[in-house]
Image (cartoon, rainbow, N blue to C red; front, side, top):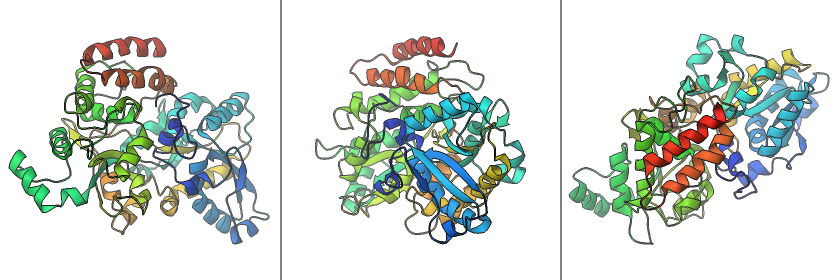
Length: 445
């Protein structure tokens, strides 16, 4: 997350892009309500049945409204409780949470929160420990359980999650001539990469001047490098579980070497990597300029029909380093303000959202949090990205971001500038990370 004011198509900041589990939000999701506006979730029969059943207000981001609307419609129909969404842009949503929770006067009954906000607001939220039965925990990915726990208490129920996986062009990977040439050069079959070495080999093989590059390198975001960090076996990204700063350890250095050398040494990515963000990388791939990209799984279903690669894209789990497949998930959670006036009713909605988590999959973003919800769709046409997503979220090296209120500041002022500095010829990766350690320590001390 580089400059927090950097925007993507539709006017979303990079924070919002990642926060939604982070991928780009479709135009349909953006139009679900105006920025900062209020819109009822229910329509038709749902609205009519809300009379006399009470009402709940959900404070969320626009993409979150798209995810939760099918759940809210079903809840209203079943219980008569009307659900009203107040949807704000990402930064405005954080500010609203901060203002109202700090004052102890929330205007909402339920908040849909980015995972990185839970450490900041945990003291103003109601723990949901009794909802996390053994059965519930068994159906949630380990990293989501970890990231939802602050000081040993569950401060939110995960409602949707995402992770980067590998997208690759099947028209290239399945071409008989390409397959033959690749095997002759590298000695093994051309297929979706599973390791760093394979990723390097394939990226070099498909780099053919300015017409085609093997992959992209995203200098304007941090998540992808952090995925390599956990793949390399780090105890955590930037901080270990005890809060110790480890950004300059061997795993972080190895990950930066792998990540930046795609640009610096192998030269398999388009020029201008320092400025490439999620939107730029997505556009490069959709336009057929890159053979592979590491990208958020939800984007598989959002490739435009007029894109050169439409119908020619395969999906595979995230690549593995020495510690195995690993990624940095992007979950959001439903949380209860501790000073809320409708806690019991609001908790019933959160439980309903968990019980009917699969309803969100047919929304514009098409994400869920439960293993069983993803599994329900994984063999259906159009959802070919789900098996790789499940494998990645369940990967042995997959880890959440550290539970620190300073995380966004660390990203903006240390991580992204460090990555961008590493994308220069002759960059000293160890020295950059040693300097980064001092900066992070000053923020978290």
